[in-house]
Structure formats: structure tokens, C-alpha cells
Amino acid sequence: MNKLKIINDPIYGFVTIPSELIFDLIEHRFFQRLRRVSQMGMAYMVYPGAHHTRFQHAIGCTYLMQKAVQVLRFKGIEISNKEEEAAIIAILLHDIGHGAFSHALEHSIVNEISHEEISLKFMEALNIEFKGKLSLAIQIFKGENPRKFLNQLISSQLDIDRLDYLKRDSFYTGVAEGNISSERLITMMNVKDDELVIEKKGIYSVEKFIIARRLMYWQVYLHKTGLIAEKVLVKILQRAKQLTERGAKLNASSALQFFLTTKIDRVNFTDNALETFSQLDDYDVICAVKSWQKHDDFVLSSLSKALIQRKLPKIKLHNKLISKEEITNIKASVKSKLNITDDELSYFVLEGKVSNHAYSTEKNPIHILTKQNSLIDLVKASDHLNLMALTKPVVKHYISYPKQPFN
Image (cartoon, rainbow, N blue to C red):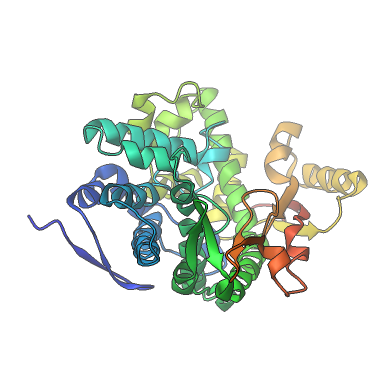
């Protein structure tokens, strides 16, 4: 069987699978699940084209990692074939632990364990199955490889992950502000003192990348309608789990039933839980939510209808903390109109905050390589007046509540 396949990607064109091991990993059922996990959660409620998947994103990252290794080798950086394959595997599998609708499961029926930790569990399971061939990739994924720049290609403020998802999400949403030049940024990469850096002539591309990231967060990732759609989904799953714990019978696939009936966190995420997680995807969740529209429980059925029919709650974003008086008045009004208990009220009136930190000068800052072969922080090297402002986190507070009583 020919395992050196070519995949046609709408962003980069033809993507070559460089080795038989990588082909076998892509073909594995753990990885194939990503075809059924959306890249952007509920963002399609706002941007109808945003139906692309984690699978597509991972393939795109594989392409960019091959380009990065090619560029660095051309500039005299020694990277062995084993290191290249390991780096590609690490970026290929970096999101394999994402659950249905990307982040919704992490805040509802799977608790206190992040998708990165689940990704690591998948990689360790695959490493056993592939007889230790993923050991170096796991080391790079964990950021423990002695060659720092390899770790940075997987996770940093200018990593391969961000270079793909910004460009890809911009393409599928139609939001042109996020359309960065990923390949130019990679062409400008270099290594100095074992650190991944950007050459001086690439500084404007990096500036555009930082600005694009900020715009994409407020226009797309934290768009208020997409935000409340995801919050409603989280509340639906939390309510379903609560009802199941009380003995209620809910229609759901066997995989979803497992997570509704079993407490899953970092401590008890066993091999059996991992196997069941590998069978859970967007389809399980959306099919269940569709059937829950007719459930006897008012909370579950109302929230399910709101999501499926896109009759979402009203959401207000404020730059300042919302006053306790306003929150109290909203809660009292909703409780009276819906005739619900305090426990049920927590499913209908949601409050919290969201933040975006476009660039941090403290956590792995991006360094620019000058013509004098010295390193300087991006902010100091840039003549862009707004870049310093982007180093400060922007926090917005939100409150949401039903627009009208449910039918």
C-alpha cells in the first residue's frame, strides 16, 4: 500500500505526508475522530462557513512544520530526520485531545483536565501501540527537548499552531483581518542560541500577526453570539449530567452516556475513559441535544431548543465590572417570568468575563534577530505605536439572560 499520500488542502494546496509512520497515525481511529470535531466550536452560529475541523487544522500544521524545518535547514540549522519526523508528529497530534465542539466538554462533563493533558494521554497510548516510535515527539510536545527551538515550534507566541489556525479560521469565516502570511513568517524564522527568532526584515509580518490575532479574538473567537452559544451548550451538558446523577433517563450515545454517568477528572481519567473519549465527537452531542428538546425537564428542553433553533439568550458585554444591583434585578426578573428555582436560575442567567492578551512581553517573548546578530524583544524593535498597547490584557465582563419567556 502506498503510504506517501498527498492531501489537497484549500489553504496551502497539496500537502505531502512525509513518512509511513505519519500516514499510519493519520489513519488511526484516534486521529480520524478529529474529522468530527469542529475547529471553532459554535462559531458557525455567527459565521456560516466556520464548519472546518480539527483534522483539517492538524494537516495544515503538518504542512507548515515541514516548511519550517526546510527553511531552518537552508539557514544552516542541523535537524536530523528523526527530529524532523518527531516535530511533525508532535504538531500533528497537538490537538488530538480536543473534545466535541472543542472546548465545551472541558467545562461541563469532563472536569479539571485540559485538552492538552488528554492529548498527551492519547500520544502515550499511541506510543505503546507503535512500540516507542513517538517518544521523541512526546518529549518535544511536553517542551522537554534540549533543543529549545523545537519545543517553541510546537508551543510559543509564534508557533505553528497559531500560524495555521489564524489563517485557516480567517479563510472559513471570511474575516479578512486574520489573513496572515504564514509562509512568509516561516521564511523569516531562524535560530539563535538555540532559540527560535525572527529576522529583522520579517518584523512587519510579525506585527501584522499580533494585530490579526487581537482582531480575530474580538471579531471571531470571542464574538458575543458565538460566546453565548458555547455557554448555552456547556449549561446543557451540565444540566444533562445533573439530571443523570439524579436518576433521569436521557437519550444519548453510549459514549456520551458514559461521561454523563461517570465523574471524570484528572485523577480518574483511565485507559477506559480515554478509549470512550475517542468515540465521542460533535455528532454525539448534537444528536443528543436535538432529542433533549422534548425532555420533560424545563431547563434541559428550553436550553436545547435555544441552541438548536438559534433562539439564543441576550448577552451584554461591558468594559467594566457589572454592578451587583443590575445582576440582582435581572435575576429577579427572570426568576419571576420563568417561575424557576434558584438552582434553575443559574442555567438561565450567566455572568463572567472574557479576556484577550494579544502579546505577552513576559511569557516567551518573540525576539527579533538584528543585522548585528543580537536579539531584541519585538516591542522594542518595532516602530508600531500600538504594539505596546497590545501587550496589556483586555478584559470584558458579560451577563446573559433569556430575551423572552420560552414557549
